[in-house]
Length: 255
Image (tube, rainbow, N blue to C red; front, top):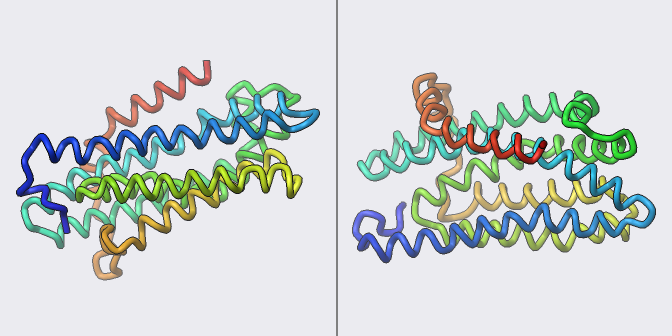
C-alpha cells in the first residue's frame, strides 16, 4: 500500500515527498487569492464584498484547523501501523478519523449556518458588509463536511507516500474553483454567494477524489467503523500543538 517508504534511500525519498507537498501547499493559497480577485471586481459593491471575505477568512481557517486536528493526528498513527505491517489497525484508525471528520463537520456546519450573523459580527464585520459575509458563510457551512474531508484525508494519502497524487488532487480542485468563480459571480449574477458555492463545489470534488482514488486508503468498511475513545484521544493529542498554531494564525488575521 505504501510506495517504497521502507526501502528507498532517505534523501531521495524526502525530496520526492517534500517537493509535491510544498507545491500543493502553495496551490491551496490560490483559493483565497482567486476569490478575492474576482469578488473585488464586482461593480458597486466590490469593496464591501472584499471586506466580507476578509472577515470570513479566519472563520474558514478555524474550520480547517479542526480538520487538521483529526487528519494530522490520525495519519502518523496510521503510518506507524502500516510500517509495522498491521494494515487492519491502520484501517481502523482511518475509519475512526473519517467518522470524526464527518461528525465534526456536521456539527460545525449546523452551528455555523444558524449562527452565521452573530459569528461574523463577533469577528468585527462592518454593517455594510454584513449581508455579504453572512451569505458567504452560510453557503460555505453547507459544504463543511466536504471541506473537512478534503483537508483531513489529505495527510492519509501523504502518509502512504503518494505526495504527487495529493498535489494533483489539490491542483484539480483549484483549477475547478478558478473556472467556476467567474461563472457563478458574474455570468449567473450570484456575487459573493457564487464565490462561496464555487469553493464548496471545488472542495467536494477534492474530497471525492481522495476517498475514491485507487491508490488512496480504502474506503471505510462498516465492520471497522466503530468509535474508539482511546484512538480518538491519541489522534487529538498528537496534533494539538499544530492545531493551536493554526488558531494563533487566525487570531493574527482577525487583528
